Amino acid sequence: MVCEDCDEFICVECAITDHRDHDPKTLPTAATERRRSLLKFLKRVKEEDLFETEKKIERIPKQIKENKELCDSEIKKLQRHCDEIMARLTEIRNRHEQTIRDNLVKKNDQLKHVKSELDKKKRGIFDIMEFIEEKNSTMSDYSLIDNHRELREKLSELEVHMTNCEYSVRFTRGEIKEDYLNSVVGKTIDLDNIAVTQINSFQYGNDQISVLETFSEDQCYIREYQSQYLEKVNKEGEKEQKISFTLYDLCVAETGEVYFTDFRKTKKSISCLSPSGSVSTVISTDPLGPMGICQSVDGGLLVTLRDDESDRYKLDSHSRRLVRHITVTGDVIHEYEYQEDGQTRLFTFPYRVTQNSNSDICVVNSKSKTTSELVIMSSSGRLKFVYRGQNLKKNFNPTDVVCDSLCNILVVDLNNYHVHLLRLDGEFLKFLLTDNEVKGPMRLSLFKSILWVGNNKGQIKVFQYRV
Image (cartoon, rainbow, N blue to C red; front, side):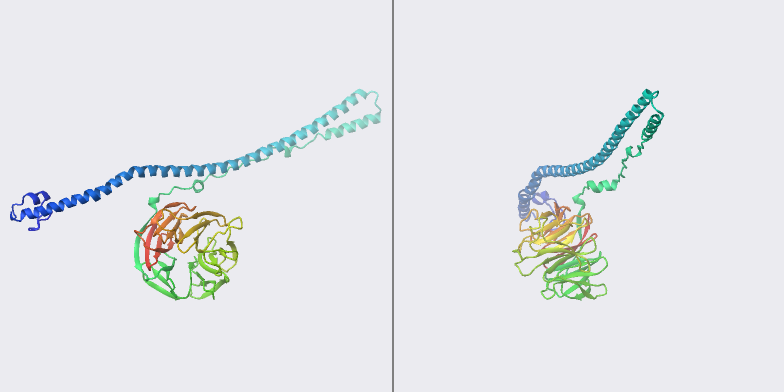
C-alpha cells in the first residue's frame, strides 16, 4: 500500500495501527477508511473470487469423469474401426483361401477322373493278356495278330499327360506399407493442436461480407452485400484491385480463372473472369438460378441451383433444388437432387458448397430464414451425414463452409457466433472460434494456413490456422 501523504510504500497493518511520521489526528480517519476498504475487498474475494474458485474445484471431478468417458469413447471408435478393417481383411482372406481350395478340388477331381480311366484301361489290358495266354495254343494266326494289335492299342492309351492336373494356384503376398496401413487405420488428432491465432483485423465496410475468397497466402477477393464491385484485398486490408460486375458467389481455379455465379433473372449463368480481365459466359443455367460455387477435386465446378418459381422454403412437385457438377466448359457431369431412393430430396435451399479432398461434397442447406444445416454426401450422391449444430442457444444457422488439409470441416454459425470444427464424417470436434473472437461471422475462406473470416458488419479478421 502507498501512503497518501508521502507516497512511500507501507504495509496494511502499519497503515491502520501506527505510522509515526504522520499527524496522529488524521491517522484514525485514514486507518478507518483503509480498514473499510480492506473489509470490502475481503468480502468481494469471499463472495466472488473464492466462490468462482470453488465452482472450478467442484467442476474438476466432473471434468475428470467426462475426460475418461471421452477417452473411452475414442478408444471404442478405434476398436470398431479396427474390427471393421479386420472383418474386411477376413473377407478378402476367405476369398483368397476359397480360390486356393477350389483349385485343389478341381485338380484332384481331374486326377480322380484320370485314375478311374486308367483303372478301366488297365483291366482291359489284363483281360486281353489273360485271353492270349489262355488261348495261345489254340488261337489261329489271324486271331493272334488281331489280339496283339488290340493289346498294343490299349497300351498306347496308357500314355496320359497329367500336366494340367497339377495344382496351379499360387499366392503372391502384397507389400505391407506402413504409410498405407496408417491411412487405412486412421490417425489420432490432438484438438489442442488445431488452433487459430489472429494476425490481423480490419474494417472493409459497414455491410455484411457476401463474398470472401482467398487465392494466396496474402490476397483475397471481397465483396459487400449488394455492392457492384469486387475488390482484391491483402491481409493488411490494403485494396489492390477493383472490378465492376455483379455476382453472387465465386471461386478461384488453380489456373487463376475466377468462376462466378449470377442469380439475376435476366442472366442466370456461370461466367469466367480470366487473368487478363476479360469476362465470358461459361454456361446459362436458366431457368434455374445459380448461387454457391466451388472448384471440384477433378478440376471442374460444383454449383448450387434453385428455381425461383416456388417458395424458397416450401417445396412442391415442380421445385428444383440441387447441386450440379460440371466441367469448366459447362458440360454436366452429375446432378445431386435426390437421395438414393430417387424420391427423398437432399435440399430445401442449397446456397453454399465445397468439396473435401476426400471427394465428399459439403452443402449449406437453408431450411428457413433463421435455420440451416450442413449436408455431407459422397461424390456418388449417397447422403452420409446431416449436421445440425452443437450446444445451441439459438437456431443453428450456418452460412459458409470450408475444409482443411486433413479433411476436417469448418462451418460458421451466424446465429451463435461460432465456427465449428467437424471430422470429415460430420462429427463435432470443438468450437474453433466463439463470440470471444468473432461477432456475427458470415463467410470463411481458407488458403493453406491462412483463415479469413468476414462478418455481418463489414469486419474482416485474418487468422493463422494450425493443424
